[in-house]
Length: 380
Image: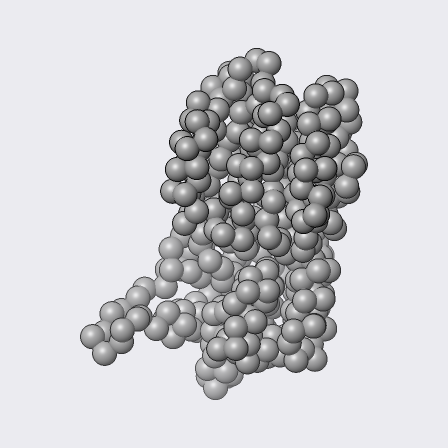
């Protein structure tokens, strides 16, 4: 990638959760893309982000160390994070912080900014809202005033979908303009390339292979993933890949045993090379209660795999119903399953959906989205 014209490369402090969740993935991939374009990106978190898995030029990681005092029942992470942000900004001469998630990162960024101003250093704050910081945590009366304050104090606020922007403006006293910059996918990594012999490890030659990828939280409705799968297999032979880990995993494993599906449902936990599993699949199942964007759906589509998903949240912005996937309403569950069976039973129709999924994913190529963030940074 070539860096856009400007006086010098930027020095960016990237603050995110280090987990496999969508916000951590987006932050890490964004940082890697910016580093390739010549900017210095300094990740600040309590552990190294999951996808920051190898040495790369212009990428740095600064660990937030937690000190445990008997006085505190819980370690004050926000204060430790704030201190580390001040330290890195001062020593590395950062131009801006880009924080992902309003709580606690935007709050810590405001504290760090005020401390730095007192020390004679000016720094800007970009806050990206990803979902549950607004739709779940942010609506809690205990946190809502803090979220509103963090949004108002940011220099620029972005959201990953129109849906999330509307939710932010609806639920919070937000006098700040919220710009929509959608999530993205690296098409050099996520592509329809199947490793020889991988599919055969999970299903028979005449079976369809379905897949679900998530952090197995309640909002992902893992029970419905299994219900959709069982209903589909009543009509066509199929196997299911369950990729991820989380609190709903034990219950899902127990359900599979009770339903006698152990040989056809494969729990493979977290996988760094999830793109290889997507690429050998035929259909992704994503019946989430809500998704602010649906990054797992986008990565699946980039591998040429259509998505069967809930008609909720930001998913309709990504998935064209009957074009590159299926959107299932709450009162249309069985109709959704029947449509999935029709697609999976018709090789020509399935290929049409695959092609449409690839085309849609190409519109979210990181090479299209990255310059929008660069433009936003330089405007500050």
